[in-house]
Length: 154
Image 1 (cartoon, rainbow, N blue to C red):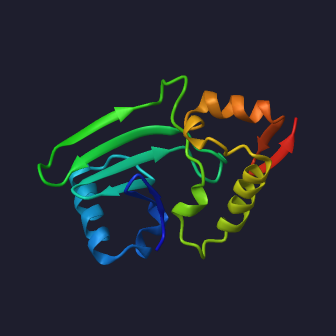
Image 2: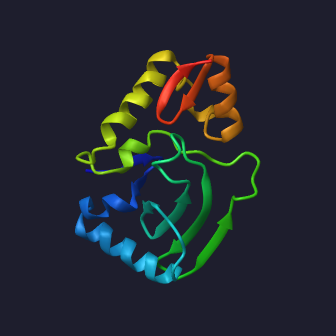
């Protein structure tokens, strides 16, 4: 199945929705309707709760920052919104290639970027690199820079 599992939630990019089982796609459709036009490109699917997250453009940022998030409770219909646009240390997304259809042409290059960083040890203790400042610090410690989707020594 498409997507990335994190603590029981399934994360999937908007472009890979067609790869989801019909039941999950239906829940997502309901959440999108309740969110009434909120911008999003990644969905976080959990039982009864759907997150619609708007990350930076995947084609522009190797590790996109979270810009906005909408949380939809499918049982209650409650919708809450949070903006991260002014955050100096936003959440960032690793392993974005897992959120797309494996047949997507971009997956191969993005997987190579991730593997290059894994091989260098940059993903060790990954619970510490979920925010932009920590990620930048980790890359600097390893003497690395990300240019486009390429890993380069500083």
